[in-house]
Image 1 (cartoon, rainbow, N blue to C red):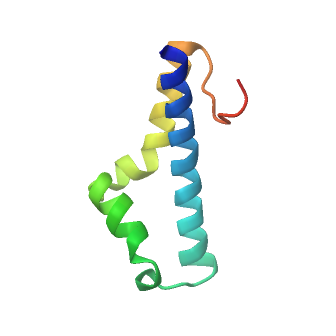
Image 2 (image 1 turned 135 degrees about the horizontal axis):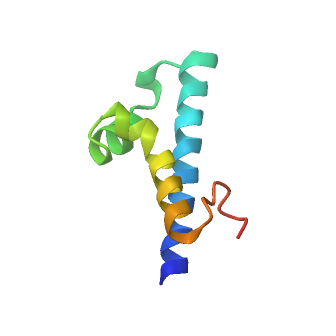
Length: 81
């Protein structure tokens, strides 16, 4: 149970960070307007995380610190056990 939960949390933190990176690349580098992909903001960032920037940007860090303190490994890259 502990291994499965730590794996799920590690993947969530990693995918969350990749989603943030993907969004920033589309918005800032490629110049794609936010109205072109509103599902990303409305569904995940606004509905799930309530639009709180501290939670949005801090969630992966908090998960990795929690994994490190409970299991001894932060598992930044979840495919590495």
